[in-house]
Length: 280
Image (cartoon, rainbow, N blue to C red):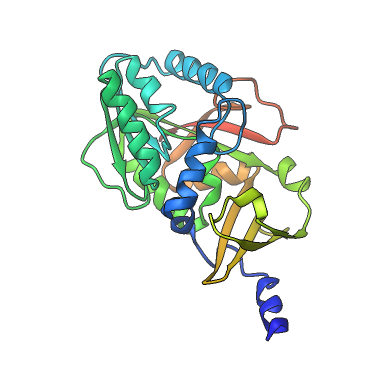
């Protein structure tokens, strides 16, 4: 019995075979944990550190001429760290996120400051609107967490909601980051310092590397007295040509290439990169 369970824990699934984002973002306890990480201003975990966010917002506002009436869609907006800042410049912002706790926090800040932000608590893959946007953003490499089919679905959605002269800004993990990853197996009581449950639990982390697909999986198995959960955290890694191909299939062309979403110059040795894409 125990052998069979260990075999199951250590089994390598096919790339993107399972999708468990809802288990992370909609679970009451873990979503509160994620919000706590979002709001830690000096670390890059759920959100970038506050100094980077401020530089990034200033660059985006300048580069895309965000001003009164600019229509911005923030896919995966979290607690509104970007959305609310854009709204302070007069933009009309729509923020979409899975996490009820993050959206609630973002709304409270927007209401307090009388900001024009429409926060939508929904899986952005299912989001529908008649609005047309000048700028669509997806940052913190959220694009990489989606399967090929989900990425295609999302890009088609971007194409639908974007104005003809609008732009998409997104960032991704690079192949340099992929090459630095190694397969590991970790076992710890209270894995990640109690992140997964307020109750006693044992945690397994299996990191699998898929060389052909350029995908990394962090597979978490969380064992409590009353239940066992498995959470799959997938990340796709890109080179420029692969990302360009996916964008072109959905009607986009890469217009600019950067190191990050703060507008720093591209470096081919970096662990991530950002692109501005427009309709062609």
